[in-house]
Length: 80
Image 1 (cartoon, rainbow, N blue to C red):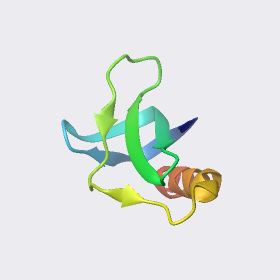
Image 2 (tube, one colour):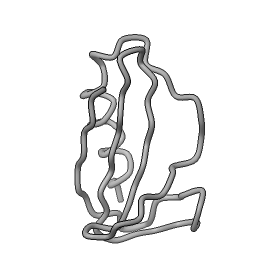
Image 3 (spheres, rainbow, N blue to C red):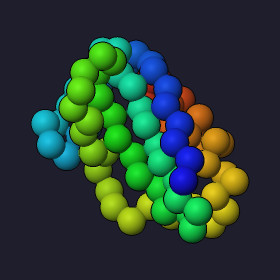
């Protein structure tokens, strides 16, 4: 299992399942299992509670793509 985290600033917000839209300094965590199952979580930088991004059952065809997918998610979530 591989975990990647990145911090970024979301000026217009990111939708979560639990609390709706959050914005500001955020941290994205993606976790990829050996079989390609991908989980996405987000929180305010320095907070303890993680929130779930909408959607379920994400799966990568090849777990080696985890780094690229993580970077793409950060780029999309932080765009103005």
